[in-house]
Image (cartoon, rainbow, N blue to C red; front, top):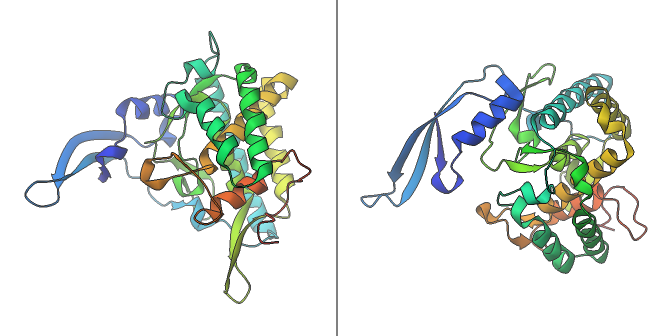
Length: 304
């Protein structure tokens, strides 16, 4: 059984589409309706769900290493996770459709219908000039309809290691959970999830003292990234095309900007991150995006 705040209710239509595309890796779910809790007036509405139990799994976030150099066993497991991840993106590709007009015009969800306006907000309000410039160039590329080269289809709305259930001994992905924020978007928007698997946020020194957060890539991150794109290209040959790869790179950047550029704030997702309250998100933006002002991809320089 699962209980969700009504404002974060899970759509059975979304679950049905997810199971159509990704099969049994999306747990079977049934909506049992709403109950009210919170005293006599029952002010808080909760959605009650009956869900398939997935045995013998842990969250990927519970087992991913927090050290820069992966030992041979951890590297092998990360490679297996990456290969499983390519399966997700391949199924998302084949489960979508090519837009008949333009890709962004066929995205009607909370994020999709406001994609351009959200990028405009980021180009005005992100805390660093290089980020604002990146948001502007990304928005301009979206308006040039570069995303039309990839299918639109269901994208998981919170593609994080916390929502990937894995076998604890092998780290092979067994289930994708929490589809509440999923919506129709261009393929590749969820590629920010790959970055989460290629490193970690370091916010304490070796003695345990809190320090300015940094996103640290594993030493083998580029090897893992290469495996991802090679495997993806084998599963979806179109990925090897120049226009498609350009569109996927753009879709990835849109996803990073929209998912890390706005604070969650209990689902409001309308406040641009800042250097006071959201250093974790800002450090990911800096590390994951190739900035246009001479910043190479590297560990975040916020602390320098």
